[in-house]
Every structure is written in structure tokens, then in C-alpha cells.
Image 1 (cartoon, rainbow, N blue to C red):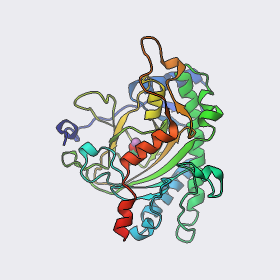
Image 2: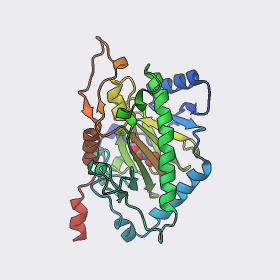
Image 3: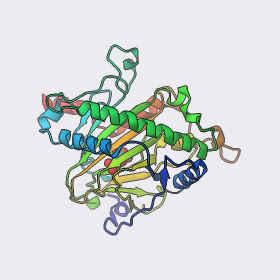
Image 4: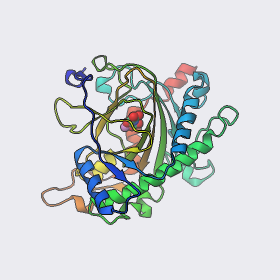
Amino acid sequence: MDEANAADVAGVPASTLNLIDLSSSDIRRSVSLLKQACLDSGFFYVINHGVSQELMEEVFVQSRRFFGLPLSEKMKLLRNEKHRGYTPLFDQVLDPANQINGDYKEGYYIGVEVPEDDPRAQKPHFGPNLWPSEDILPRWRQAMEKFHCQALNVAKVVTRIIALALDLEAGFFEKPEIFGEPIATLRLLHYEGLVSDPFKGIYGAGAHSDFGFITLLATDDVPGLQICKNKDAKPLKWEYVQPMRGPFIVNLGDMLERWSNCIFRSTLHRVIGNGQERYSIASFLEPNHDCLIECLPTCMSKENPPKFPPVQCQTYLSQRLDDTHADLNVYRREGA
Ligand code: OGA
Ligand code: NI
């Protein structure tokens, strides 16, 4: 166990994050606040984003209903090869060097709904979703689909401000070959009321940075999320992100870090359980499958040449998911 990482859980300070008001007409101010946030912490809140409080509450109610089902029911919807469906406790290990069992969380992946007979369903990450039956969870699918779609629209608005902050034209990322057909994933998360113990390698979610472009996170009001502004510092310094019902917490992922040649860094974060049950909902935004993530023209110079080789979005994402999730054969063996 990394002693430095285990230190200082009590007494962790709260972070102050910038608020970006998506209804503001002062775009220059929004760009400046976002840029400052991206250079400082890689985390910010977005407010007045257009998703109603009612819908936010509804998806949390529906998420609680799902996770409240007996394990045997949830296991009927176990994650498949397309990364859709239920992920039980310990299915993901985000920080293997510092964790014993894996993440003390359960989750549910919902992706872009593509019918089985659609040629696009041949691609990784695309295909039909797994849905709990209407008899067991009425209106569940409708609520999730509505929220998934609206969160994606909010994320697209944020990409416009990010583009401006990187000295690109506002619509740069909205080109058909970039976010024309994005891999957009909703993930419901449930942390049981366990107290994390970094000394023993017990975390709600191990330290990680997200894999994609940006993540929008909605949380209940139980604290747990911690961020580390400088992932190169030793020892790592952690700060709490204040939970807020209503705003989305937005953070930058590794694809954007690669794209921007580390001008915008993805931020290390983790979830520390304090004994209270906690629910959160992450919306991950990744570009089209074959979009090439390569250094942006405005992010390189003679003094600052590209730091990463170009990589295809789908290849990168599959690799990161496979690296952190259990092999599905584990469950087949258990079930046999
Ligand atoms: C994630 C994540 C944080 C949270 O899903 O990548 O960091 O608060 N979630 O659940
Ligand atoms: Ni994360």
C-alpha cells in the first residue's frame, strides 16, 4: 500500500470549483472561467444547463429502485461484451496498485441504443441496451433514455466552450467526424454505506482519471468525491468536491488530455465512503468510434511537440475498459 496515498483522509479540505452558467450570454466570461478551471483543477460545475430538477430527481429515484432489487434480479442483467448492464461490487478496479478487492460500488451501463439488426451494432460499444422489465421497474427505461439524451446535449454545449478555450472555433468538436455519432454512456452508480479505509486499500472508487473527453456527474448530497489537482505531486493532495443537487460536476478525461497535448489535464479523482449510502450518475462523452485523437493544431509548437501518438477513440476506450473491468468469464465460472 502506498503510505502517502493512504495518509490524510480526515481533514481533507473542500475544493472551490468554478461555476459555468450555460444560460449566460457572456460567452467570453464562460470561456475564461472554464479555461481557468481546466488549467487549475480540470473540474467545474455547470449550472442552468436545461435539465430539469424534476428529471434529475426522477433518475435518482429510478436508480435507487434498480439497485434496491435482489442481487439475483440484478445479475440477470449482468454487463455484456458491449459494456451494457449491471456491474456488481468489485467488477471494476480503478487503482489496482492501492486496492485490495476493487471498487466498493455497483453500477449500470446504458449506451447508445442501436438495434441488433442495424449494421452499426457490429461496432464495439454500440448495440441494444439491457433494460429491466417494465413489470419490475415501470417507466425506468423512459426516464433513463430521456436523461441520457439531455445530458448528451449539455455535454455538447460544453464542448463548444472547451473549443473556444483551446483557441479553436466553437463548432470544432461538433464536426460529423468528431461528435457526429459519439460513444455516449450513462452509468448509474451506487456506493453502499461503507467507510473507506485507504490504509487497507478500501475505496468506493479507486484513484483514476476518466478515459474519454468529458464526464458530467450528477450526485446526491452525500460527500465522497475527492480530486487531486496535481497528479505528479508526491505525496498526492486530495480535496473534496462539494456535492450539489442540480448542477453537473464536469471533469476532463484522458482523451482530451491527449488531444490538447496536456494543456488541459485530466484530473485524478476517487470516491471515499463515509458510512452513508451514496448514489451518483455519470455521463461519459467520447467521440465517434474511428475519430483519431491526435494533437490539436493549436496545442503544439516547435517547443511543445505532440506528446502522444495518435490513437483511435474505440481502440483507446476498449483498452481502458478491459484494463479496469473483471473478465466476464469470472461470472460464467461462478454461475456454473
Ligand atoms: C466515475 C467517477 C465519481 C462518483 O464514474 O468515473 O469518478 O462520484 N464517479 O461516483
Ligand atoms: Ni471518474
